[in-house]
Image 1 (cartoon, rainbow, N blue to C red):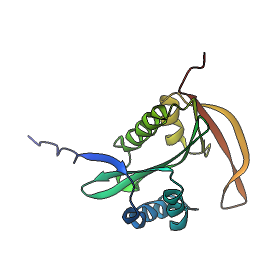
Image 2: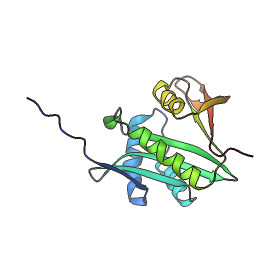
Image 3: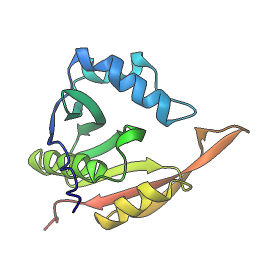
Length: 158
């Protein structure tokens, strides 16, 4: 009888400046048009909620959340290609939603490529729905690609 190996434990913590090299590496391996190391650094310096998912003392995923004026915006959520389909993206998203609720956010937004079916499936599972489209939002091989704008209400207004 073969006993399957258990997944190593993962944790989510605030991102540190020392994580930026690993985060940037995951970003480059995940996207054709990745964020630069400087963009991640600027998110940390701006005080955005920057999270790192840690597996065996290494960054295996990350997420960036901006909170202002009763709203939150998921700016980036990514899992290392070698660790996808293990529920890590959902764990990161759950933590972002928890932090947004803790900040008494009324609504949370994000943009996603309409071709990113895996991400769309996760966001829909968590109660996001499309409210708009942003034309020519993403850089693409040939020109630009639209973004689907998704939203989820977190606090019911009375």
